[in-house]
Length: 451
Image (cartoon, rainbow, N blue to C red):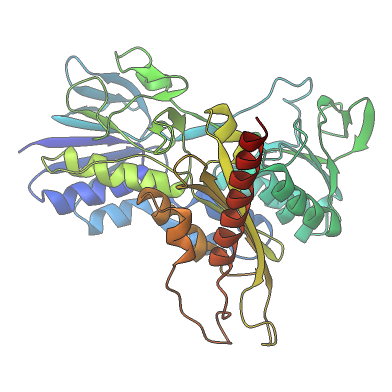
């Protein structure tokens, strides 16, 4: 009987195991993880905000594996020997494999700031992190969050919902700098400010002050009171296990091909420890999203046991909920396009999520980004009170299928006052892009005639 060993029991590891078992039930599958608690890290900010309980998001990994016919080992892997095809654990166990999937995930990036080691400085990546933060915030009033990406924004909102005084520090000029263009970042910034979060943009934390535990934070030379500091500066791949066993690392993550194979025969990788390829630029990049990990896992799990599956690449489609607004994005931003020397034309439209007169109707703002040369859709950003996810998914589908401005203008959509307005906001944004393009073409004609 062939043996598949999976290192890591998070979402990527477990989905790899389930997929492999469904693909080839005859394979003996062993999943090794250092904890029996299975949960989605994406749910942790909602635990902090007290919108869901820890008991609501945690399952028993051993029980889940047992029900699926998978051997689950709660232990820590200390060595991967790709020459002899052996995985060794901290407790002295050895597991021989015919195929191996590495799903070691990621670990929070910790910036080099004096005082970062003090008690009261936290990250939010694991369920234990959440438990520690939940315990600490019972008796504190002031929090500083470092990092204005998705993690930092969600943590800030969660702490504010618990009535803490929250200061969010971001080194760039805008929040979510890699996900949104500045005018959309500004909407998020206003929403956080309106809800009482103090934003310090284009700012740097100089030092964290305290004797044994945090007392304050120095930002741009000013002292800010803080009994708790949460680091939200992103996640880096956990690749320590593979550095010395011949597995190739590109940039920060494990390099894989479209079958999730590494450069070592019969060794695959999936999840936050892996680099992905952009569907639009062809470049390798990190895509540390749950949806990416799921696709990685299904591909690796299928191929590791003799099936056939491919992973084409990523658009980094993302959705956040911050107070009462949903924030979605997919594909390239305008800044991404400039960096890749793509000339763009954009379409922007504001609409409502239902007929404007219907109770509960909310505003929604859409920005579509097109390649000017061929008019194909390459990105979108949407902020609204509801219904953002479905529109982002639609645009992602349009990007993959090379839809053009004209295709989106001709979009066939449904309408009923209680759920959808008579004019679709995506169509309105595409029409706006066409008008801009027509004006640009007319300007070129006038310039040519003057020559």
